[in-house]
Length: 157
Image 1 (cartoon, rainbow, N blue to C red):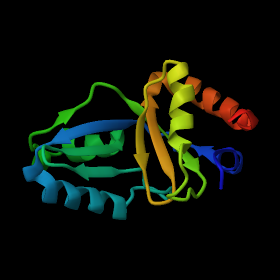
Image 2 (image 1 turned 180 degrees about the horizontal axis):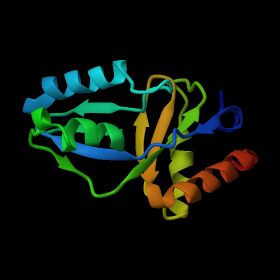
Image 3 (image 1 turned 135 degrees about the horizontal axis):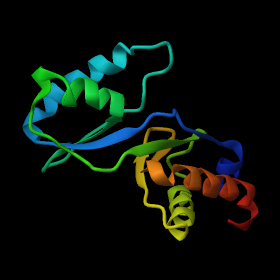
């Protein structure tokens, strides 16, 4: 699959949720992961559970969760008063709903290039077979428009 083929075949998907970007200490890894898994396994509605990302590096835990999950698990829940920082920006999810081969080179570069040209900041996340980006809630409509234009102009890639 080439980049133009992936863009042409793929659909842009968003779930309508807003998201928060969190930073936690590495000592909270087990507790945070257990909490997120419990939320993911028992969604409060019949719709699919919202996107969640959990990343641990040597310095911190980074979590991307829906604002409703944040409110329920971190902001308003007494047991989860663990030390954490929440970013000041609300984000929206955009998923490239197409299976991408791990060997496809330059897909995210093409996406981020057009968004950067439109002065839109991006937080990328790669899953096993799909890529996701987060843009600020205020840039969401503009980002979707830019990406739809990219899909329509894949011949220039």
